[in-house]
Image (cartoon, rainbow, N blue to C red):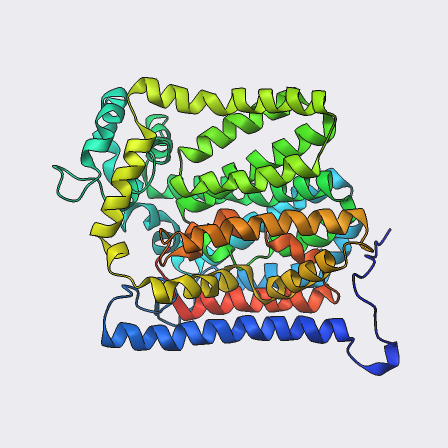
Amino acid sequence: MTHTLPSAEPRAPRSGGPSRALRRDLYAAGAAALLVTAAVLIGRHIQDTDHTLRVNWPPLLASWGPHLGPGTPAALLVAAATVAYGPALAARLPWQALLAVAWGTTLAWTFCLALIDGWQRGIAVRLTTRNEYLQVIDRFHDIPAALRDFTHHILLHSPDNWPAHIAGHPPAATLTFVLLDRIGLRGGGWAGIWCIVVGATACVAVLVTVRALADERLARRAAPFLALAPAAVWMGTSADAYFAAVAAWTVALLALAVTRRSVAAAVASGLLFGLTCYLSYGLTLIALIDGAVLWLGRRGVRERSVLLVALLAGVAVVPTVFTLAGFDWWEAYRLLTTRYRQGAGGVRPYGYWVWANLACSALITGLATAAGLRRTGSVLLRRGSAEGGPLRLALLVTAALLALLVADVSGMSKAETERIWLPFAMWLLPSCAFLTHPRAWLAAQAVLALLLNHLLRTGW
């Protein structure tokens, strides 16, 4: 059957034209568009005069280059089919089938967008260029020795210093591609496929979480927006798509642990959270979303204590393994902050990026999410009359927004947040479940993604 969502705001009479809530949604989307416009115009001026932004098409790491490609027809077909049939299918499919279809749609959408740039540029060479991980695989022929020596090559003046993205991440990121190489999945093509296929599962993880903590109706409404997100432009292919999926399953498993009283799920969540922290230093902020999950899934003191012990036991595993292998996370992070200031991070102006990063977020989550966040705020303000499911979803989205804002003000994310913040952006998209007129908003999401991928040559 088709589900309807009780509105958090009173609706205007049908004969009165657009409702007040819808007008406010459009104002929020317009504000996001103005933010992006300001970031482009002001960024262009700063880059042309001071050359300090270190990006060609601010606020994105991209360059202007209108083009078509082999993925164009398929991308248009996926977009049109999802807009036309996505909401109805999401409402009617059995839950397990919906998860499979959502993952398949996300996968198809991401592959098609990547193939607009062709197989070579769009997928095969992305992870072998721009200081990416495949460049240093040969230096990990002795993995224990490489881990012990890892921190000695982080700073720019150190001998044989690591390329930027190897230095900028804990070694689990690089080790992933080293291990793929060891099992025979060598080269940028396989690495790109890995990131796209695994990254697409983040959509499933978010849906599982929303259903567990809020309700299935909201998860079903959010599904088409997760599958057709503009973020797919950067999910294919960037290692951050892989990071986003691992982080998302950390949250999803914790949600299952607190709602099903599953110690095994709590341990698995802890294991993945430990791995997440060794994939990217900044993803320790996923703990804010995990904290919201623990709070939303409140149980008795004894149950909470058992789950927390299980979670912490899982969390300890990956750090223990890496520490025993000779890698010091805290020392590496300290050195990274120095390396960051030695490179582009020390040149890029904080005063611009602290708000232009938010414009990047508007581009990866789309205008529908700007409207969805407005609705989220409305649910929170009316929490006394809001139903349990909508309020719980609003709190989950707010925790993700808080994590993103902390990353922003830290100053360690200046530029390139269109990929760096993918793990946080995935948790803003479910706010679209609050929207009315889903097909129109889905169309806006698809058009934005298609324009970005066809008009710009993105760096990721």
